[in-house]
Image (tube, rainbow, N blue to C red; front, top):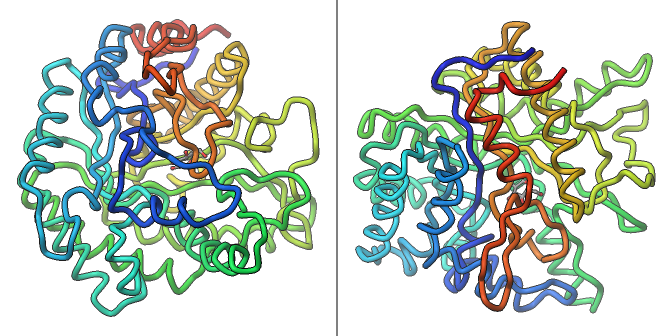
Length: 403
Ligand code: BGC
């Protein structure tokens, strides 16, 4: 059965805006307030205060890694105004992870920007790259002891979300419903393709901070790319390559020269001569409307390794479901597919499940991805069986996966 290399990272992932609560100075918080139909993040899971408890859940169940992010809007709530208290907060989080035996995998940017940054023209403003570099420069001193740094989370999805935000703004003005960036379902129009111009800006941003982080921390540096695990219908290989470039390869090619690449995949999707086929309605579809495809992570890891030539770290993989037995079945299938890719020579360094907690899914609270449920009023954490199940696999480094 599949085995994973010694030192393999077994953990779960989170993002600041989705779990911390009260991310008042971020652009997403501001958008939540004005988009009809969008749920608010509010106190989220209050992980800003409860991070030790969250990390303990992982450590106590046999995991050795935790991916979390640093929130730029907290570090620099106004241009050039650095919060030393917030820097100290994230340093405490890193210390807590290390104390509990969890390798911190730290993300510097996970979709959200400071509100002032967005209002000053966002990523297309001429100063955008300098602003990001300056933020990263501020954060680097607290990263001591961190071995894995993700500069940006899913720049390709962010490039799509940025285009979508413009549409959402217009929709809000016209009194229409907001469209979710991550729920791909129903009669709504398909999500727009990532904006290539913005995508190239993200490439510039990533390259601008990569060496800075590497040289001053000694960490392995990479970024994480969402992978849609495209599969071509007969005769549609060319169309698939075209779409792959816009959705993934632009970002994967830019990862060459990094130390690793983060792979994030949830489902696989067919491509025909007209483009991406919507997921057909099916009782097995997840709560975000995607097809139940545990094998997606195998397709994604292989494609990512082939394009980049780099070691891969699964920085996200999981399923939105209310049925935890489905989560276990999905994850078991995903780990088998990943093990097969590893056996075929893909250099896989770890598996970080999305997500540790049921959290704020970018405008909704409905889709639950967590290994742990969270009561939104009391913030009480209730582990689901999947937390112990995956921890059990972690303890045997994958050897206990059944055939
Ligand atoms: C993002 C997460 C998100 C997850 C599930 C990824 O696109 O990085 O923030 O919650 O997928 O949709």
